[in-house]
Image 1 (cartoon, rainbow, N blue to C red):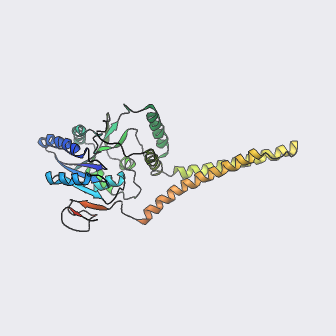
Image 2 (tube, helix red, strand yellow):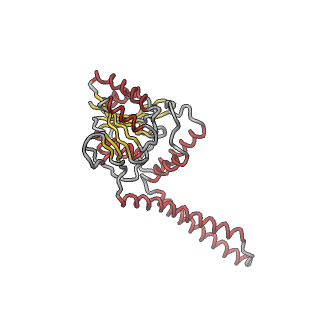
Length: 325
């Protein structure tokens, strides 16, 4: 069985050689069991020496395949590129910063041989702060009440996929991708095991608070239209409240006479209604924006350099040629 390791990279010059050395050792241990391995690295527009180091690794190890983007297109695009260029019977997705322990590859392969199409590594919350743990649990509890697939706290991209799962995911050509949800949506027999997340060896995570919020919003919107339905119900509820309030004002005027209108009440009602309208428009705008990006039909990424022969994103032949100067 050929196993493809897909590793997105972004400014990983301090750790990429160490990562490759570690997975090489795992490949050597699996070779007597009849398993060969290839390494598919996707450079997501790094601004450091990551691409240069990948080229050097490819010269030293014929199993290394790399794809380098013309700019930073994001991790979702990098995952898609890695899956497109992986030719293995099974594909293991993992981060290149060694936070996904390579020694777990043995366990993944063994579980896959038992008949599981997806072998999912679930990270425990050991070592996380209390605020982050509580926030994550609340988020997943909310999302799973809304979305059409089940998203599990601690489950990310670190997983093994069989070839038929990879092909199924690649058949989903949508532009706005949320891979965690796509993996859950395609289904197939799967199993999950827990592991303790390793400490990042070098550098800092590129995830910012804004990026995490946007990622969370993608998870909320990508697999359901319930926010639109909720906006409809909210509008109907507001209309009902307005009718009840109007009836109360009329009855109070008939019984007690007309009082001087309350300035605070009017301002509060107008402000609340305007806020609700902005929220509804924002929800509609999110879905409309996604339709806009889908209709444009732009590619998910552009390749600057690759050593993969016949890459669909290349317009020239030859080996290791740069497409964009």
